Image 1 (cartoon, one colour):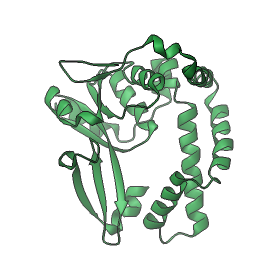
Image 2 (cartoon, rainbow, N blue to C red; image 1 turned 90 degrees about the vertical axis):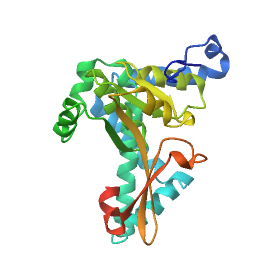
Image 3 (tube, rainbow, N blue to C red; image 1 turned 180 degrees about the vertical axis):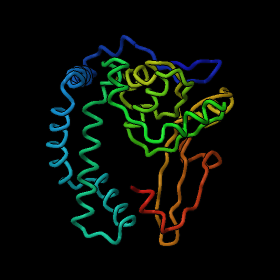
Image 4 (tube, rainbow, N blue to C red; image 1 turned 45 degrees about the vertical axis):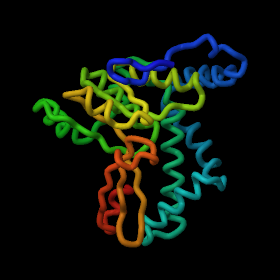
Amino acid sequence: MSKDSTTSSYLPTFEWAFVHPRYWGTWLGILFAGILAFIPFRLRDKLAEFLAKRLVRMNNRAKKRAVANLEHCFPEKTEEERFAILEQSYINAGCVMLGFATIMMRSKRYLEKRTLFRNEEILTELVDKGEKVILLVPHSWAIDYPAVQLASRGLPVAAMIKKQKNRVADWLMNVQRLKYGGRTHERADGIKPLSNRFAKVTWVITCRMKTTAQSTACSCLSSPPRKPRFQAWVNWPHSAAPRLCR
């Protein structure tokens, strides 16, 4: 693993230690993901739906957090209606995860065909004017798709990422993210490397929401929580929570 000394960008590299038996399971998973990338997406999505509808029945910490968030955002809905939203979220996540390797394995033309930007003219107009753009998006693997797509169009894209515990997965995910160029910055370095190095850049950062009885706070996390000076908090009216969560 290395970092570019002039830009502080995050550039993990291949190491022979990656062929150690401890990573053989990871390589098998990567092989499976590569095969899934060439399976017709409708069939792959059916598999994701099948798995998601079983996983959503499991009571783990992630599900408990999701249930709590839905209760805050949609108090007017019944438990059955909120569960339907949760189930669909699991299905969407499954579709993204099973098709995640398509970014690496499939062509630029295929990715363009499978990616849809709504209101793309807003971004295009700003970029044409030389404006800096910050994309506030929910934290999920799906954000890699639009970021890579924008990079494939020649836009100077930078992303803040969290280093993966599995070193093989961390290396390959970064290779995939930089397939068409751009830069990644490890969030432990804070936001300064990102803000200092780019005059014209499309930023991709994460947005987390928490709801209280009075308001919904949106925190743009560009660094670990132990560095609050790098966090920007914006209070939203409580009535806006349903629209934000959708």
